[in-house]
Image 1 (cartoon, rainbow, N blue to C red):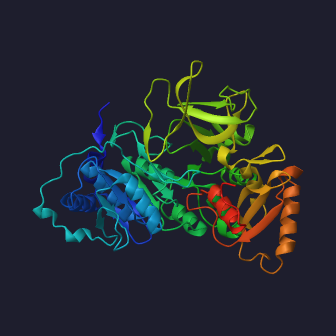
Image 2 (cartoon, one colour):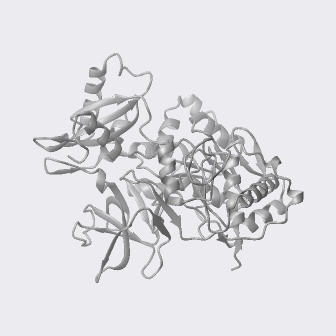
Image 3 (cartoon, rainbow, N blue to C red):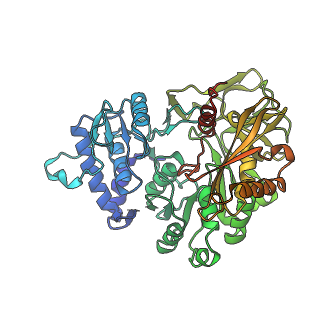
Amino acid sequence: MSVISYAARFRQLALDDPDRPQVSDARRTWTRSELDLESDALAHHLRDLGVAADDFVTICLPTGGPFVRALMACWKLGAIPQPVSSRLPAPELSAICQLASPTAVIGAAEGMDLGATAVSAEWDPASIALTDRSPLQDHVSPAWKAPTSGGSTGRPKLIVSGDPSLLDPDAEPILLIRRNGTLVMPGPLYHNGPLSWAAISLLAGGHVVVFDRFDPMTTLAAIETHSADMVYLVPTMMRRIWRLAPDDRESFDLSCLKVVWHLAEPCPAWLKDAWIEWLGPKRIWELYAGTENQASTVIRGDQWLTHRGSVGRTTVGEMIVLSASGVPVPAGIIGEIFMRRGEGIAAPYRYVGADAKTLATDELGEGWESLGDMGWMDDEGYLYLADRATDMILSGGANIYPAEIEAALCEHSVVESAAVIGLPDDDLGNVVHAIVQVAATSSADANPGELIAELLSFCGERLVRYKVPRSMEFVTEPLRDEAGKVRRSQLRAERLVSRGVGPSD
């Protein structure tokens, strides 16, 4: 095995086939040679601003070619790219920068004081005359990425990868990614999943097609236009594509598509059934893991059909389901999921701004960590998710998992998305409350009471009585972000405050 730096790999690709497309966004397509030269220019500029190996560089850019250019520039300096959403409010961006202490921030709004040198989102590579610059030395970043996560607490933390920016160019790419293939990536690159799939595809010589924002028709058109062999989706995207008019959805030639990856949020069974019937079971793949990457599971559509609801068996690391007292539970019993990369193997990440939830016992050994997810395993070792422990609702002595109720609501044709939370109740402790984003064409404004009754009846046909929401509200703004994540704890806190109840009451 012969490993080289990411920087060396991108230079190698540019020399091998300089005119091959590397990244396409809504504005233009960058070839390998163009991105190599432009990232060189940005690396020189960052170096002149004081960025050195091992430094964090916060990337606050919209998804597109300039975002990838910034990643490559960081790797060429041996710096650590620390991506965030370009839409972050100033206080959130400031909090992240306090954690990361970056040397530079690329793309922050003008005038923001973040304690770091600012590089404009409009930075022009033509402003750097490379002919007057010495060649960049080959560098290796000690961590190839450092994305952020608020988790269930809402407080930001950095998840710094334990892997340096090194790869074996002769090794087969992971995640079913093909050499010199084409990936359509409608997710935002500041999130770990889209970032990982895009980076691995680029390093495998691939062409990555990205978007400012997700649009169902644009995504399908890109698959056909670019003859993509892979697309990465979250179930929210899958639902919006499925709800296109059948004539629109089926007007695109998707025969080029070999793999549809979906992850990041639970996928309702009805939706997965629909996609399997549409595209075939062997093209639909699901992965479950955290950004921390202690362990992961994978399942293909045909395996899922015989293990409905499962996210697969462990393919990397180890997983175990434990009771509240830390004892392994029998098959079929819900408990908290703990993971580790393997006994005696170092953690594949480190936190900045948080501590891992760990467990070590004489019986189980050391290195076990929990992301807060609840679930169970069957007799064959297939994992099934319930929900996050922090989001579970205890009502009248019963454990209720919001994801199950949200999936039922989202089967209804007028529901775009749903978030289910528990609100305090003197009798039951908590009652189930549903926050529902409805389609613009629904009757929510004209007849909200009628629509609530219809949705509650709809849930009653799919859920046991105690899981049916006791109350419901309609919203117009999206409940999930671009990566399919919903922050239920924040939604609950907002509603408690509006009722004059302290969030901790």
